[in-house]
Image 1: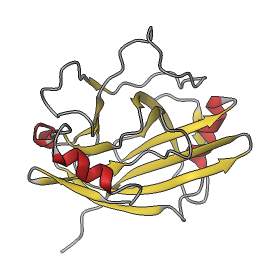
Image 2 (image 1 turned 60 degrees about the horizontal axis):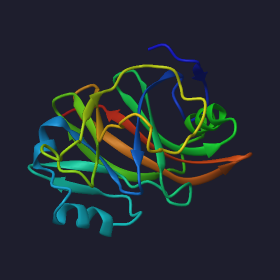
Image 3 (image 1 turned 90 degrees about the horizontal axis):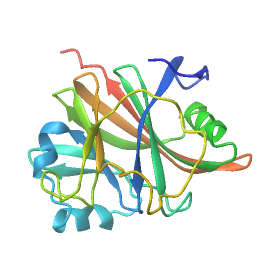
Image 4 (image 1 turned 180 degrees about the horizontal axis):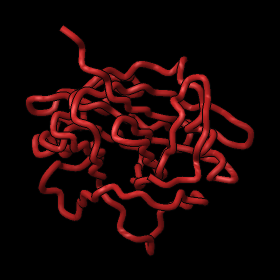
Length: 211
């Protein structure tokens, strides 16, 4: 995947991150789950209240016959805004919530920041190889106006701009092709940089255990 963000650190594998999409949060958590589980999610009912009640606790939640990870969004970065989605091959995904100027530098520095001290957000399975990032406030299949878009590589946004009345419709979620298997979620809450701050959620494919 082409991108201008190529870097090496002690803690992140050398790789090229491609920006593959963005979703807008009004403060609600997002879920990361296998596409087959999406129809079982009911954001308008008690499932949403269960996720919100967890606050910023790093956790997973039961959805249907499976488990979803939680991207809880960090109100100390901003109480609303864009979640930027980056992918590095089939094994790694990053969700970044950032503020800063220049915005692209804030995103680059968020991706490159060491992950040794990140919180462990647990593991969940993506057996179909199709992962969905979905707003927990929306029903999974029949919310009017909700749209699930396919993630596609594109240019990294160069500015943070608030959503406004004339803005293009933003999706309720993104569907992203990854390697089928188990993923671990690691979370870094609000971290300050020079003239910037960010929160980050890293999803990494876990090798199958040998018997």
